[in-house]
Figure 1 (tube, rainbow, N blue to C red):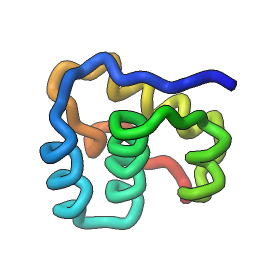
Figure 2 (cartoon, rainbow, N blue to C red; figure 1 turned 120 degrees about the horizontal axis):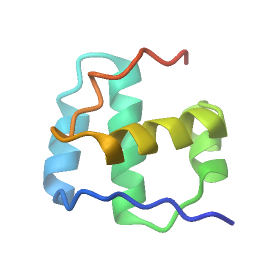
Figure 3 (spheres, rainbow, N blue to C red; figure 1 turned 60 degrees about the vertical axis):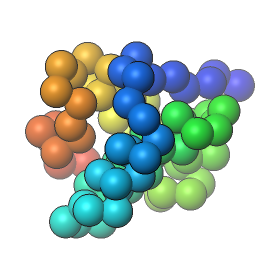
Length: 81
């Protein structure tokens, strides 16, 4: 099992706020993925089951977030649901 980690040290309340203020379901799901990774020790398979995204998409969302400087999921390409 490959545990996912975030490089940014963003607070859980900040992630939850961004998740709850999302304007679309796709953006909500991306913030939810990051929140779950920050809060719990989860793998891509579990997140794939809960969000409906493929494991490859989960890895891509996390990698893009970890590479970003401004900690925003809205700037990335639009992943299909």
